[in-house]
Every structure is written in C-alpha cells, then in structure tokens.
Length: 248
Picture (cartoon, rainbow, N blue to C red):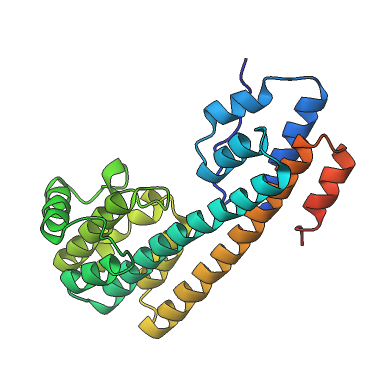
C-alpha cells in the first residue's frame, strides 16, 4: 500500500521539510520497504523530486547522474525565474495602472518563444473575466495563480487579473490573496492592496524573488546529494550530515 505524503513543492517548502522527506525514504528503505522508490516515483507530482527518483535510482553512474540532476535543476530554476518575473510584472502593472497590453508584451519578452499569441491571450483572458458573475471569485479555480502552472495558463490568468483591476479597481483582486497558491504572488499583491509606493513594491518583489530562487537552488543541490547517498546505501547518520550542511 502506498504511503500518504503531503504534496511537495520544492520552491515553497522549507529546507527542513525537504531534508525530512529524504530521511523518511531512507528509514523506509532500511525497513526493507523495497517498493518505496517505485511508489514515490508514481505518486509525486513535483518535477525535480520525480527526476531525482528516476535518475538517482537508475543504473547510471553516480557522477553522471549528479551532473544531470544539477542540469535539470538549472532548467527548472530558469522556468521558475520567468514565472516569478511574470507575476512581478503583473503586480507592478496593477500598482502603476499600466495598460495590460504593455504588461503582456513585457511578460512575453521573458521567453524566446512566446507562450501564446497576443490575440489568443486577450481572447481567453476576456472570456475568463466575462465568466465572473459576482466579485466572490476566490473559489473559482480558473483564477488560481500558481508557479506550477504552464506558462500560457499563468499568463492568461495574470492578464485576466490585470483587465479586471483596470476596469473595476485594484481592490477587486483582494480575493486572490486566498485563491493564489503562490505565496510570492499573494505577498506582493498584498503590498499593492495596502497602497504602498511602487518603488518599494518593485524592490521588495525583486529581492524576494532572488531569495526564493537562491534558496531553491540550495535545496535542489541538497536533495540531489541526499538522493545519491541513499542510492549508495550510506548510513542514516551519513545522510543526516549532508542535510545538516544545508540547515541554518
């Protein structure tokens, strides 16, 4: 029977939680639970953890596996950086009352190949706004803002929020504070709704994104090293020492 574990989000979970995850896998393997890796591979939705479970427990030499793990980490970090940047641009657009089309072009420029054509994006965003029958849209899943979304989905939802704010005023976005599953977006939006100055919001959003990405990179390196140590059948104490190197 597969064990029940909370959904992992490497961008937002604390490093202590990620270390505990790998230590729990080590404990299960030590108890001769031979199926634990297969169960985790089939159940986890977190892309980096899933890649570690696939690569780290393959027949690939450890040095090559680690090289690929770190390459995968950088690929995902680039994507997270782009998504946080789109959220930041949307937040600043709401704060400054920028034309949604200008903001859309700024968001598109984060990608060498735009996630979606302009007309299609505005058509879909318009449909999303038109689907609202009242202001209590926090429960409407279509307005959830999440870094795990595909770029085109995130772009349309941010654009819809921009259109709505421009028509009705920024206060209409207050329900997004609870609807958004991205802590970064919710925190930055709260600054806008508190009517703080745009330069402060810009600086805060920039530094917060940098801190999030830096911490995530360290968590990814720790996870890779713990995964490979487990695969190499190192002791629990050895693996715990790896974790301690990344704990404040």
